[in-house]
Structures are given as C-alpha cells and as structure tokens.
Image 1 (cartoon, helix red, strand yellow):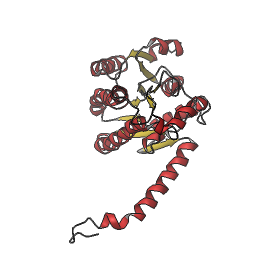
Image 2 (image 1 turned 60 degrees about the vertical axis):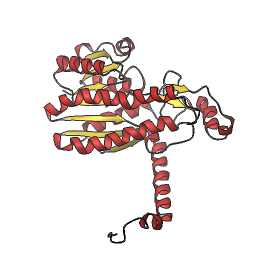
Image 3 (image 1 turned 180 degrees about the vertical axis):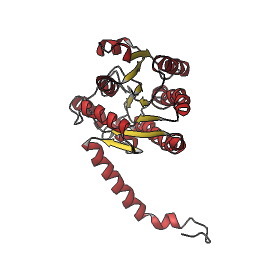
Image 4 (image 1 turned 180 degrees about the horizontal axis):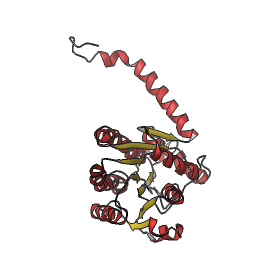
Length: 280
C-alpha cells in the first residue's frame, strides 16, 4: 500500500490527489495550515487518512508532520510538494515583503518539507517526489514575474535532486501544469499588489485586468490533472519534467522555438568568447 504525503491539501490539486489516492486504497497524509477543512472534505476514510496541520514555512512543523506520518503508516512513498501561492504585479510593483512571503512558501517551504521527508526515503532506498511547478516555471510573463521566478527556482532544485537521488532509488519529477480550474486565481491563493505604476498599463496592467475573467474558465480539468499525478507516481520510469494541459504544451513549443532561434542568431557571439585554443 502506497503512503502519500501531500502539502497544500485543503483544496485544488492537493485535495483532489488526496481523494483519488484514498479512493484506490492508499494511505494519505494530507497537510494544510488548518487541517479541519481537509477532514471535512474527505470524510469516511478512517485510519488511512491523516490530516495534519502544517505551515510549510515552519521547519519544525514539517519535521513533526513527517514523524507523525511514519508513526501512523511506517513509510512515506510519495511526496507531493503542492503548497504554493501566486503574486500578481509587475516586478517593480512588487514589494519586498510580498516577494519574500511568496519565496517563503513556494521555495523555502518546499525545501523545508523535502529536507524533512528525504531521510525517510533515503533509509527506505525508495520514494517518489513530485514537485509542483507551472507553465510559469519555464516561461515567465508580464505581471507574474515574481511568481514565475519561484517556479524557475523549483525547476532548478528539482533537476539537481533528480541527479542526486537517482542512485538512491528516489525519483524526482517536476510537474508543470498549465491553467487549471482550481482556486489558484482566487484571492486566497493569489495576492495582487496594491501598487500600480502607469508605465506598466499595457503589459502587467493588461494581465491584472484579465485575471478575473480567466478564473474558473481555464482549460485544465483538475480531476484529470490529479489523475495524471497518480500516473506519474506509478510510472516505472517517471520523467524529470511532465507538462499538464494543452496550453502548457503550446507554450513549451513556443519557448523551445524562441530559444533555438535566438541561440542560432547569436551563436557567433557565444563562440567568440572561448580561448583561442579551446576545442569547439
């Protein structure tokens, strides 16, 4: 029986992954700052569900939640680092406090939980880690620059972990969802900066104005997206990166084309910086 440890499990992807894992008979440690909504949303699963309070920015809480998980189920087989927040505003409009707050959750929080879980997985010599990134983890955009930068960080961390843990029986996949009909664009998950600079009206300002109309009209189905997480957790040879959603694939193709075109256009400049005796 697989044991899941899921952060941000009170709603969205986290809650739906927990529900589907429980429905197929797995054990689930579903964590959230307030575990009561988790218990209310997932009744009837008995001892296979441990709803645990966890603020991912608190390393001591992360260690305590992991200890409780191992005491309850004996192992942790799949870690889903799902907890996260968004920040809407141009880079210059984003306050120091807001930037630090989103990094505390999206990056340092992920690291807190990962450091707490990895000793368990290393002792087992087995485990799966699914780090939730975003379309914005490989392609940034006006208005979401700070949020995207946190997901760029998650991508870099995940790629290194993939290399570091492969020989220990632990697989790492960074999951890159596009826009899904979760609560991510609600004000509970997305902070919009109050500072508005007129010079960004045609860039970040346009995005700020468009977000309310996008909410709950996104193309991605969170139930199908959660099923994809289970597929990745079960895969015999899981990928380093997995894109979810047609919009994500479309943006990935656009980004690859842009990178290839730009690198070819500036290839001579890149080559001009080598020592004369370097082999090219």
